[in-house]
Image (cartoon, rainbow over all chains, first blue to last red; front, side, top):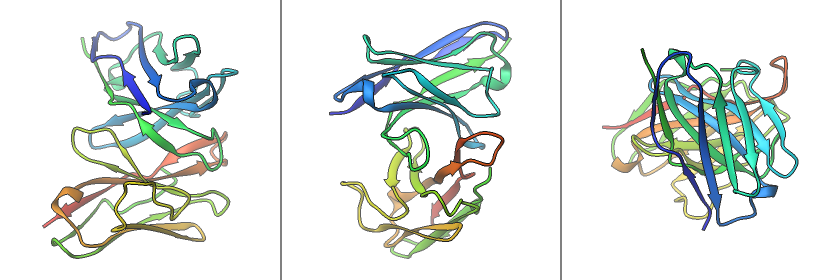
Length: 121
Length: 108
């Protein structure tokens, strides 16, 4: 059974760093893309970044390039999303999700349960 | 978003509703997700009209040119939630996955 299990809720202050995780099981982690999608209540879903764990090829949303870092550890079957300096506007629920393709016809067939990130002074 | 959806649609139980998604590239497929309150998004339709196993045949998708559609027939209370279309865009100064703004389905 394919499962994506994300790390727990986080409460941070502006300017702090954060790394959230997404542990995969039930399939060959290396050869499926993992993406991150954020949800702000009332604002819909926003695709952020995607990575191919086998060779760490990454693509970022043009609007988020440089603001977050996506990575993957194939030995741990885990993908990560990292911020070096959080802003209040980063408060959202973050979902990881799996895809067979990184571009073109890709879609997310399995999703993690979500990680709530709250950034407030 | 480059994909435009109506903010909301509604229907009585048993009725049908259709959600549009305009602005998609004719070169790329459109996919659909259901996002119920408090849950992770659920994969509903892929490749414009294909249903994954386990998705009821009350849900159907179609695409014509740059517009895609999700139809829900026999509306049920459990269908109430937000529905998103998703595709790919290579014109945003870079390549990007894109979601529509979402359509809230209300069962009256």
